[in-house]
Length: 249
Image 1 (cartoon, one colour):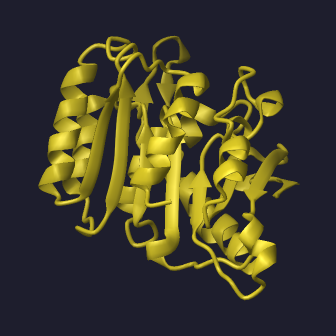
Image 2 (cartoon, rainbow, N blue to C red):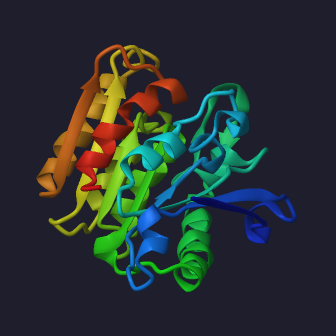
């Protein structure tokens, strides 16, 4: 079962409406005393339904979740129509034709943890503790998921970072990992498609360095090179079963 509602994030995008999606497993109604972990996801418009997706193809999480019925709540909010790059940036950087990007990732995470998560915990029967709070995303959302696991490690125990955009600033990406105080029980799923490895200069170098730095932190890391994988929702949809298994779901 999926529920949707509209919301605004005034501190990020004024009165711009965004769609929030909350998926509840069958067990939610079947056992009124049960409580569930929550997986938060970026780019909510691309998570569940093709008709809502930015480019016409979603992760098809609705079909996957309905088929398997994992005991988890999935909560996702659509991105800003105009400010996605800034809102999903943990650090400022230059982005080609788009020019300078002022980081607003911290504001995004403060909203998620300060407003959205408390509202989900209040409205639904969640397990709100760190062990049962997860986060996932792809591309810039993958970078944000890594940022969440590192800088907000007290809130998230597990993160899935699909095709994370470390390339926007390799040096700052690595510094973010190296400076983090992260619990050794943290679980991180990290992947990249073989057909996207050459998309940006030094991509392979920063990915290998990031994995090495994460392993040095002692995290439970799964790093996967996806044969034939591309930088697209179609490819990320195919990775969902492995991602969910690595997250323990």
